[in-house]
Length: 163
Image (cartoon, rainbow, N blue to C red; front, side, top):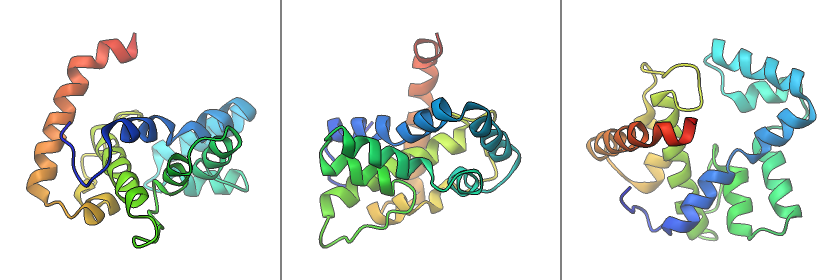
């Protein structure tokens, strides 16, 4: 993928890997309840984190950030994990974290649009309206190119990831 928005590629890779570590913890701790939340998410247009809060007193980004903080990961990764959906970061105080988190948000939006990590793509969802796109100040044409590049890379590597 092409570098955009000042995010370091290695940090962005790690932030992307860790953004949903809270889901793993929640599923391992409460497998049946979390399975119900995931099933509800597949049938609904609601965000999974909002559904998680109906079943638990917290969401996966809060759990993930707490775990990474407990493991003494850098604040950059902790805050990116905590805010990868809402991007509620002060741009003046945290410009590097904001750009990293926006890149993670945009990649997550592309996954949702393509159905990666879900049962089916959300073809009707306009992923170009993601918060990450606004923060990174990219246009729809660039996002379309990125989506095509991302989908091609995923198709090429799919067997590796799903084997």
